[in-house]
Picture 1 (cartoon, helix red, strand yellow):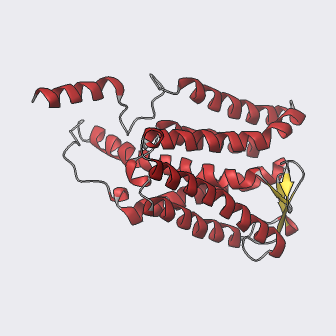
Picture 2 (cartoon, helix red, strand yellow):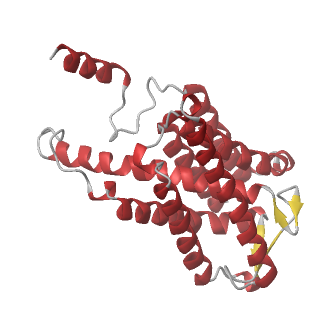
Picture 3 (cartoon, helix red, strand yellow):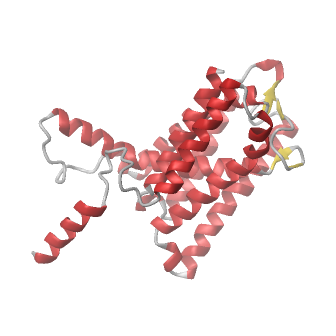
Length: 267
């Protein structure tokens, strides 16, 4: 009984409700602040036409930095940095697999036009290899992990909203949400990645990251995105990572990037 009470007290002090998008007491507060500040500032600078050269220079490093940050935080959340070498190896293998596979898909897509449609990269994202920016593989990785963060948060947010509307009734004994089921969680992650791409595509074109033949983003692009998002999410689930939840900053990274691209689209 004492052990249970102590655990509950500790959770009350240090844990965040999964249904609240809280900033207070965030253990990675500095990273969280910098994430929103830099991306929101970047979007506003684009609207105002300020520091365009600087933003172009920082674009690729920022994509890589976000991917590395959320990869580290997910690994810490899963307890991998103090866990077994085998678990760490699986994690690094998954990260490398996503980056390299995504880069290969993009190279094949640019070369053949048969995967996403006919498109090509501009010179804004450097360095590039075989016509594909190095940062693109990391961008895919960041989208997988941050979408997993949002997918982990959404069921709790829904339960929290639902319980508030019913008089703040307790949900501690409620059945697990449907998205906790493997197939539905994978589907939710893929849908979030698809939503991310739908918001990002026009902004990326406006930023000169890439362009589409005829200036039209084809439906084929979104279908391919959804399929490969399913594959990457299923791989993460199969390796046993997504079942462990996600760090809070991961979902904020998704939201901050969405904010940036929405601001760019307003420009």
